Amino acid sequence: MSSSSATDDPRQLSSERVTIPGLAEIIPPRAHKDSVIALLLFLASLAYLFLFRRYSAMDPDEGIVLQGAERILRGEVPYRDFFSFYTPGSFYLVAGMFRVFGDSFVVGRTSIAIVGSGLSGVTYLLARRVCSWRIALLTAGLTMTTTTPYRFLVLHNWYATFFGCLSLYSAVRLLESHKIKWAFATGSLVALTVLIEQSTGAGLCLGLMLGYVVLRFFGRIPSSQITAVWIGFIWPWIVLLLYFGSKGSLGAMLQDWVWPLHHYARSNHVFYGYQNWTEADRTANFYTGALWVRVAKFVAISPGFVMPVLPLAAVAWLTLETFQIKRRECYSSNSEYFVLLSSALSGLFLSVLMVRPDVTHFLYLAPLWNVVLAWILGVRELRLSLLRKVRPYLAAYVCIAFGAMSLALLLNVNSGKNLIETHRGVVMTKSQDTVLPYLQSHVTAGDTLLVYPYLPLYNYLTDTVSPARLDFFQPGMNTAEQAQQIIGSLQASKAHALLFEPSFAEKFASTWPNTPLTVVAHDPVGDFIVRNYHICEPLKGTSGWLFQFMVRKSDSCP
Image (tube, rainbow, N blue to C red; front, side, top):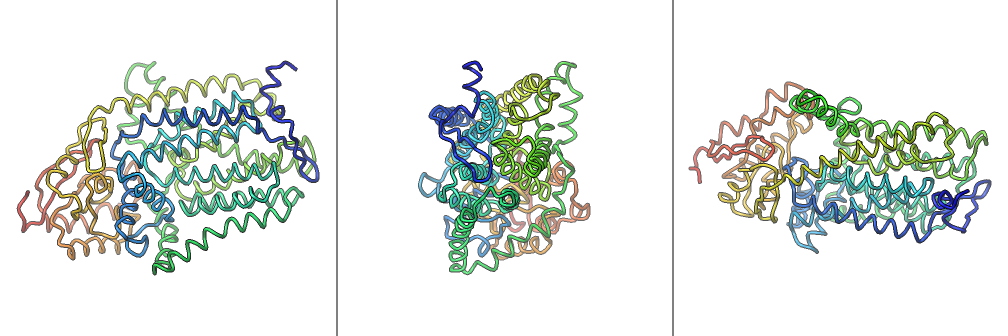
């Protein structure tokens, strides 16, 4: 064996060998070299992702967590004082950062840069267990350049993915060391993942339980470790129940958590791997430009087709490894690792299927799917001769396609030359946005302003407060009762002004294609606004969407 191949083999990384009772030996790659590489990856990712901090396309989803954190800073309690169907972890995490580091857009975005950098490091460490450092570094680089930058937004999804990745790293360390501290850490991190985003957390719980059942059945996991995992899992729930119970919010919290089971999937259901493209997007991607331009565009967007395939590979891997353990055939020292991770990924895959299996939700978990990609490209024990033959071509494709995708994302951010001074700091946009300057000229910070139906980021950047208990409204998902609550809040607060997007219905065809046409045709809140408010100024957002600044018909325009 040559010296270079010995260096690349993860089994040569440490002389420390940990014997798993019953059969295998797993050699934890804890060499100083890998620790240094993971740290350098974190720093490089942080420097790279800092380029994305101020750029915004005014995505409707981004303001949800930001406004929830603002409500908490004003003394409100989730579920009791405002509606949310998410678990509360991301709200309190962002509120805590604002309290310590200052309440600004760049602070929120910096947290996403830190999370994204951590994801790159964890991807490397997880892949390095069974792959060469070159393959692990490649997939970690993909995480850095194509995952978080794809939707560099302050979203609960990124925090949940981060804690989920830490959970799996901790679970792998438990397999390697059999130390109780890693069992306790695994349970605690899984619980925190659930408390940040329940669907991701539930899928992770289900997958890890499946993995531990398989390993326990074959005598791989001592019962003491399972007990420690449960203790770690339970304590965050005790803290949460005591806190919200003391705030009188426990009943409302449980009701809001199960709310998505009855309402979310109705309008958010899409077919597997849905791309969220508008007709204009499809025309631009496939029918515009010279042939070589269209080919280049397809290569750049092709990772969006690859990502939904990787979870299927994880399910296949789990099946293969389980049968190998059962039959004692071709059993490798890494079988426990493969069973545990592939079962956890299978649970996360199920959570995506149950919520919304579009390409965006697959990309939220891309750091973990990238580990599967590393297995395909670099695991030496896989006995598929055809795969071994095509691996060099697959690696070349990955470098070209994902590199083109990352370049497109970077160029998009660099095209942002329009700087807007807001109450939460400077925001950079690609095109002119007339909404923010107008609002900041005519609405005072701290005022009540309804942004209807769905763009709470404008509330956050202008430091205004929604009069309603919910910060966004999606017809077809949110209920008629909640529509009446918004109307009631407008009547009770005597809100002087609001920002209305009359063209919102145009988004349904591409974003929420399963929305019933009846709710699109009849919007009680929109009808109320038209009857009781008049237009002062038509405005245009950075993405080209049209808005209307409106005041009550009895009031004059500012």
